[in-house]
Length: 454
Image (cartoon, rainbow, N blue to C red; front, side):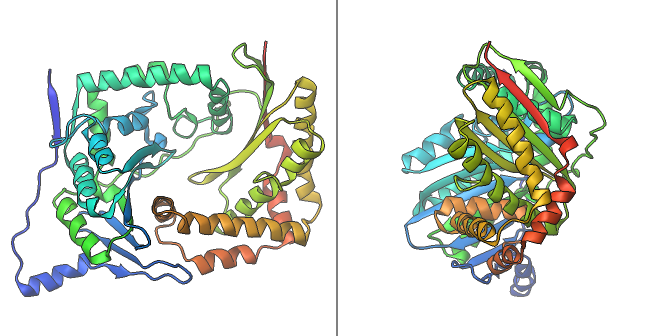
């Protein structure tokens, strides 16, 4: 068996004189970032290899969460290699120079800790929560696989089998899931932006060890990563440990820019009906793509989500589930894909008549936003729920805080200013919502997929 040791050559720096230490200390010194309104001390620094580090101190419990995030996701899958970014998530647990296959999991569980990973459209997260005296272990494990992942034919073949088996099981247990990806293809008729992050049988089988190595060297490098540490740790100690384990990992080449989206092709009809013997209950999916919203419009669009679909007090839930009862189940959300935002809604109903009624009600309710001002009371309720959710992400658990800070930093290039974020929401008026709705809620772009049992 041929084993490819993907080791990056370590760089050792000579001992510095006091003067050199002072000069070089400037690049790694933690920048205290006590943000207005933020209840925990924040520090931020950057290693010379480009690795960004965020430390949030919270000594309320003797725990610490570590999130290592890479700016890579399904958008970076090469053409006809869909599922490669998701495969990398699995392979990162299959062993590195000093850690055997799945030993990462064993090490963390033996400390009483928890770990997980996730891959999104443009980010990949690896995260652990452990007793705070085990932070060194976590950083060693993460640095070892960032520096020296081991890949071979057998490991890639094993992960392919696992991904295909999981996909088959998912299709049996969650028959509606495949239509979520169909809606993505309708809204984003472009491979990079619209393909399934899980890949297909053909694309997964086409991935080679060479593809994996090229992807790893291109994206799993310190200058394409952010580490966020949140919990019972002092910033200076965290800096020492991160520097110890990550400083000698060489910088990689700069990751390429995101591909330009080309939506000129049309995958399928904007209103279609599918009969599927695997489903037992009629379902309806709705989708709408919002193209290139301005940064100032994004909070408006997010608040619109709260008004329309977020929670039991939202318009569609009260209309379709509570009052008219055309829907048995209803959910929806916004999803950002770089310069685009999609609004998605999914519901289950008793029969096709209720599906058709729900479809009309959704269109009518969206169009109301273009014709009528939202009441001040309704807007205030949505703002209060938005504030609660936003603050909860940053104040509930160390893990939730670390994930939120990491994602915020990747999206904005800076840490959140709570006062500024909440002040922006406070400034939104009914007229702001009306103007946004008239600009983006174009009925000709509404997309529906009806799924019926045989």
